[in-house]
Image (tube, rainbow, N blue to C red; front, side, top):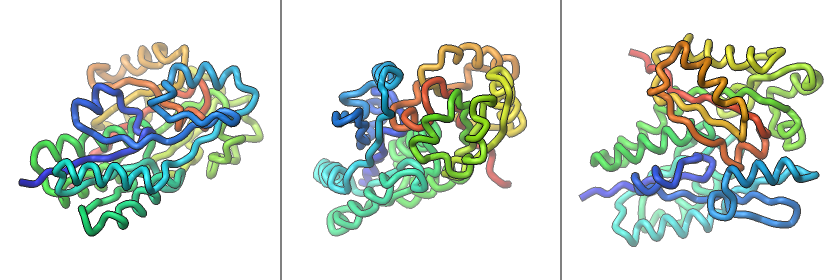
Length: 282
């Protein structure tokens, strides 16, 4: 009998409850403050991360897991009876995590087949793909089917973030296509688009309220959408955004949660992100 297992990384920002419920293996990235490396999700929770970052003089740094970290998990899953593995990671454009997983997959190819998928997304966008993959695996879908499902969702996943400050993105070198916004960062509340797997400029708004309205209007314009999620990085006004969104969207559809340290390091405190999946072509 086929037993497909799902592996991802800690940038998926899945809760411990969801990880346990679906039997997902999560490989953590490393967050370093000064000379102190901390294992994301194990030694560092989102709430503690943002408090610590706000008090730090220098930004923390992030590091991808080693290929060996993935290989150890792949081998353990094979020993536990897995007949195939689908490993879905954060955007390959933004991290060496996915390539590390691909290297590990080659190392265990004589033991078990591992399919690596670039989610082209982050945080809850990645998390939604992983959850659907886990559900499909639990339903007995084949390795090919689960891989195809993930690849299809990756193409249709949209991610936008209302950034409260561009300082983290600028210092961290993750601005990419949004670099044109940096010169006027003090007078705007930018929106970034990570739907392509890269950080691109989506809009420039003059107030936080207008950035919230932009996010809401974009979701409404893209309807019908599924897997709608709202995440935040210690944003005190996240309830204000949800109230605004609730004027147009049934909030029962929305999965909410924290944006963890991997993304928060670059997006900064106060970030509010939305992810969702648009309908496919008929």
